[in-house]
Amino acid sequence: MSLVGTEVKPFKAKAYHNGEFIEVTEQDLKGKWSVICFYPADFTFVCPTELEDLQNHYEELKALGVEVYSVSTDTHFTHKAWHDSSEAIGKITFPMIGDPSQTLSRNFDVLNEEEGLAQRGTFIIDPDGIIQAVEINADGIGRDASTLINKIKAAQYVRNNPGEVCPAKWKEGEETLKPSIDLVGKI
Image (tube, helix red, strand yellow):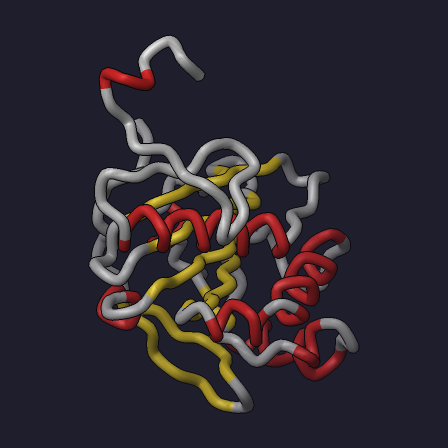
């Protein structure tokens, strides 16, 4: 079953964020747009490239009113150690959530039960805590934050413009569609 259109389930987790350990709950996702980026494990190969790419786009995401959270089944202590030892991860300024209980990974249906690791899942969550988009990649396929930004802009546009939808390859400022009987068979 798809999680799109469902509300984020309750959770409480520890995160490493800007030199401190903090607590994050589902309430922290409300009132703003959020992206939760699950990845398999710290100290691996594709994961640091993805998280560094998210950091490289973090200012643009924040300008859109989006907070980013990365999540793996590692602990918040492991996140700190990785942050302290990796040049790529050392750049990260968004919260890195630890999910050793696997609660979040189960809530978002990205837990690989056999390995005890999260799959590469990305979730766009609106200010009401409702999941608007989901992307799941195989472990060997890294994600691109620039395409994530386009999806967020489309989700924000649709939320702010009821009755309009964004067609394929839509970019901010381009024409949208207004579904009606007049469009049936004309696109």
